[in-house]
Image (tube, rainbow, N blue to C red):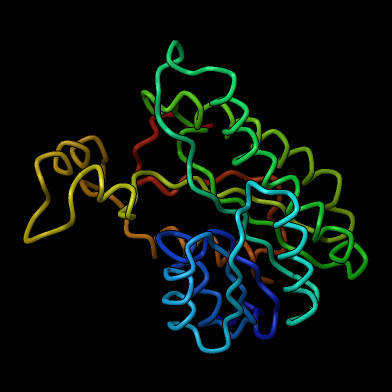
Amino acid sequence: MDLGLKDKVVLVTAGSQGIGLATAQGYHREGARVAICARNADKLAAAAATMPGCLALQADVSDADQIEAMTREVAAKLGAIDVLVVNAGGPPPGLFEDLDDAAWLNATNLTLMSAVRMTRAVLPAMRERRWGRIVIISSVGVKQPVPNLTLSNSVRMAVLGWAKTLAQQVAGDNVLVNTVCPGFTRTARIEQILGPAGDGPSPAEAAMAAQIPLGRIAEAEEIAGLAVFLGSEVASYMTGTAIAVDGGAARGYA
């Protein structure tokens, strides 16, 4: 299937590893001109080496000035951004009683304000050209809260409300806004918690997988497939959605 992504300019933030990298690689395979950003220069260089022609920029998406500079450089070197994939590391876990104002403000800045600022930087050109895609990588926690992830469950719901509202405001200009909600996925963060995959799952991974109807955690590429589809021409009648990719883990329909 031709997704209509050839020569589209795609920016994937936090694109040096995990779901971000798999998503960037998916767009690259479709012939898009891909830019990625991340904080770690070594990981960024290694990721870019897997995608010939990829533009790799060191940037922290929790910093407003760095977002502005990074998006401006992408536009200058590759052209106006057609697809923005909003991705960032999740806020740290914690119980409500253990979280002070600084923790809440940091989580809001990282998860909500990074999405707002990046979209603010690319949206005017998308509306002018009457074509754009904003794809937000979120969490299945917006469908069914994950125990102990107080900050993530809360702030990601704010992002979901913002995205739904934005989708309604820009649909008339053919700018589509959709959210991908991954379940437990094999990333560096998960492997740090569960241990690396070996000949078989660790006891911790087996316990987690037992809660998932498909019986396993996801690979990053399985999340990336939807993120690429939603940025494509084929998804031209989809906006304001939040789609779980969780192996059936969330128990409700919402």
